[in-house]
Image (cartoon, rainbow, N blue to C red; front, side, top):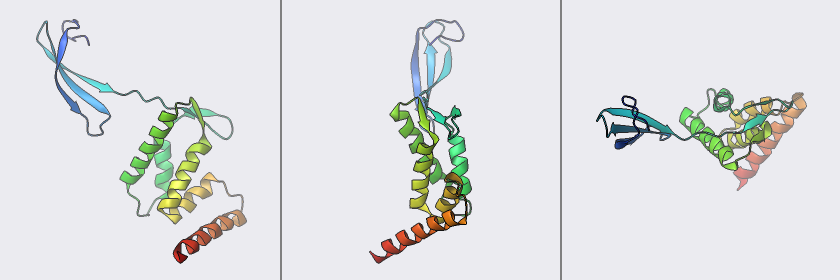
Length: 157
């Protein structure tokens, strides 16, 4: 790391601290030549895949877009913002670890739908109605009937 004052590269780290989100390290450094101190930040570079939409368009993976969709489905439901963000963190990490350059939007959508089905039936139906693009009331009703059957089965256990 070059000293911003004398441009020499000989320096030592005096102090390192992890940021609140644990994704950035703040380092205080001291130049061994001019003895001046400066701060650097080190952050892991996110390598996220492109998302291939149903119509073939490609767009960058968007954490914000996923959070927005889930938050809309969970509006006025007992699901905290922290819980949503932690889930999106897990999705992001999953797709980073896959190492693929592209993923289908359906892969992301199915992860979200399955998690919402676990969390809250109302949020699940809200999200599924948009994600699965129900064409009519019959499709919507058959999805609701499946939820009711699953609920009745789990209550009998």
